[in-house]
Image (cartoon, rainbow, N blue to C red; front, side, top):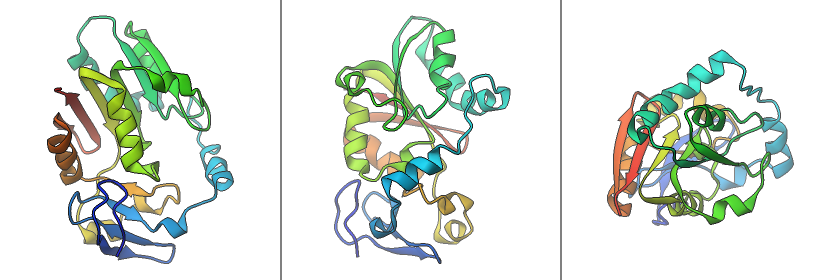
Length: 213
């Protein structure tokens, strides 16, 4: 049994085990998380991220990010807003796409853009694409993300969603050693109800949350 790193409930039970590590599921918020004892060192994690080839001139990468950018932009409207892309990676692209839509953008990444000053303000919208699954302490990072969203603002996330144990056992997404926190629709519904958010699921991996208070 483990303590859930998101809601801190006790007694998260074993959900799946493979040759690499064990995975636990919280019975309260439904987060699935990898055994903390199997985490990479910071040096190995950084080396893994350095293999990513994110390029803002890559049309395919832009199409991938547009799965979040397009529906979020529809909800933002035509006003010029302030946004932050959290976990921008080695080739910031989503921030550029929103800048091209007329918004003022900031970026943050613990490895590639470690500017803590940008975390000390609030934004009209915050995006986090393919990063939330990397959170070792999701309660802390979730609180940080929410705290940076103004009342009435938006949090736009992209991450693959966990389902049942059988599908999880065959899921390639879990095999990335830097993926340690696996959210599900139930997890986001739990967070939305607890934290006063409206939640909307777009496709299979985009989650839009509006801060109602």
